[in-house]
Image (cartoon, rainbow, N blue to C red; front, side, top):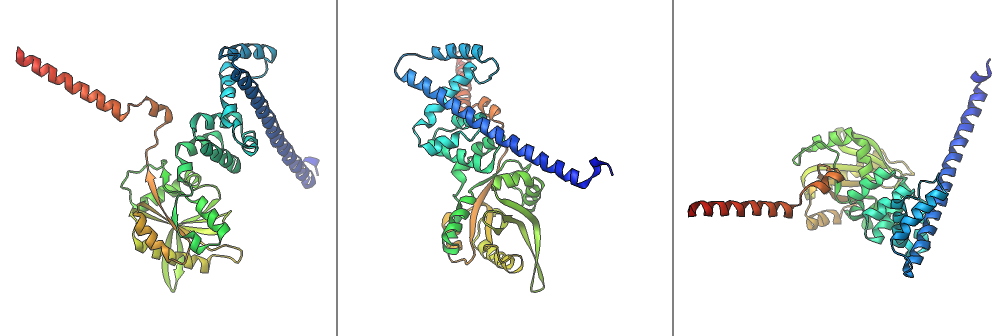
Length: 353
């Protein structure tokens, strides 16, 4: 038998490949931390000198020229990037050491995305931590910022405090959002429940991204047989961190109190037929087009199973570059009023003739 075909050799080759890849990842992380540390120190040195009033912005041009001459192989010393470094350091310098350590764990592109798009320091720290925890790519980070994850996360209306122990209750609350943004669906505003469900399962990867880290898809129209009758759950997931099944019921219209009773029934059935000993109690989400907060609170108040009510929005995603080139409402109104004024002047002028 040739050595290349020997099972032991193939196993050895596989183990070495895994080890090499692991070393490559660790080396990349280590290099990134060193680079972020370098940028932090450079930003600090420039900020301290400028704070003393010794130099203005012209120092950046001089540094860019001299540093590129000294280190021709380094790409980080362009004029634009040194300006970015100078902006980045003061953004986080007033925060504690833990935040500064978080900053150094993200690539430079991620860091500049947060600094350029986020003004509130608390919101910036949120995206720093989430990007690290979920290993987001830069594009995913941009998507999460532009969809307003910070404003939506943990805002769901729920009964978790009454139905779950404290640690799981807090985690469940932080896991869910309100509203959920479905900007990847090719549907109109008045889409029916089954149409939405089909589109969500068709774009399940993007749907999972919007749901958040930890959700694992089990099935749509998941069948349950109870007392000889068939029932179907719209969408069934398992959450790897909460360690429980998550039932999602889709409603194309406004929330109604009876929806909570039906979801409570489904959760009892899932706990009885699917839940294993090591699993936590199943939880549910009613996703509806709109809700009256008071009615939803009353509907959830005495339910025995953990559940929440969130809205969803189907929106047409507009690329950010295009958004900035479109006129605002105020600009359109101004343009229209200007056109109308010109028309009136023309008419009055024609009457004088």
